[in-house]
Length: 488
Image (cartoon, rainbow, N blue to C red; front, side, top):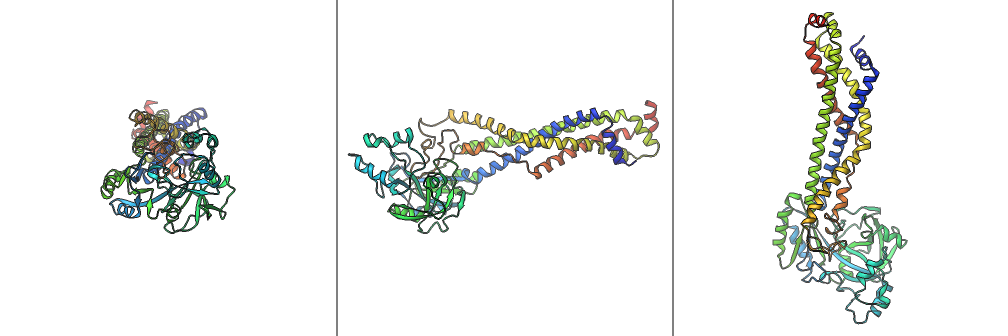
């Protein structure tokens, strides 16, 4: 009988014991694989955050943050200055527009006696009058509700009691969203040359659905006809009630050529964010611009995810070591049970490596069975384990961050909760949570059980199994046959 056939037969010699060993190994291997998958998932999320919102700076006009702000508008020349700073990989200028349905804007203008509301281009909505108000034939996709009516009433009554919410329109110099991340276009294409004035637009999914528009449809802003080039999904209700046009087009609509509402500055790595922030501020001047890290609390959150990654790796090693110990103990027991068999094999001329190979193959059969069951366990449990690890760590960090929070009603960097960056329509930290807009990113860790990760984990398990089986087998095989048989 061959060594392989004898090893497989020995593995199933005692079926009840084999089932028990496989079950215990499956739990240990499943936990090890789940932790490895969680480690990979968290690592991928850290890379994603570091490559996107974690490395962006927001530049506003000096004094322009907050709804009572002032100062002078930013210019395209200042964007070029920021782009020349070391470690800056890109600068995207934006121009914010406040787009109101034409009938609503007319009604508000007629009935708002004594109000200072201006509905033409260059209007004073938003900080420092940055958000020019223009009209459109679109209907907002978000109902005003209690909050919208309260925010827009401005102390007026009568026909002012019910309003249609404005639509966020932003002129951009590249195909990015409010955090500097690439827009997720679900249908159609981008705008092509974002530095050219062209009557094309990207529209949020809910806004397009509300108005019955698709790619190729047309609508008007300030009596100018625009064609829907693409539909995007921002992931939030507010974000999808928006339109993006090219930066020159927005500047033309606002009748403010060369002016910018904000600039999104992308830094080459998170490690350089602080130094680059200082360098950009010095280059632009404190009297011209305010430079903030739009996701400042994200750095703490990423550190928390680093801890999760380390914990998951330690847990993987611990589970792997547990599986190795289980295999070692099982093989020690089997070797002791078969001392007489080992003595007979040595007496008839079997070599030490042949005896060792027999026990190694037997342990690998048990480990292979345990790995199959463990892989199933890992595929079912890895997502929950990753989410639990991230949730527990971000909750702890959130509590710490909240204890050191800023003024009531605002986030630590001066943004407005739930409303995004004043003036630029950019999302800041303020989404009602300590990590703001990043909180959803932090809790959206997806653990995908990829074949590569499973193969790496199982290879590590098999390596431990070989060591665990070989050690007791070789130690016993080195004993002389007469000593083994005498002991029996």
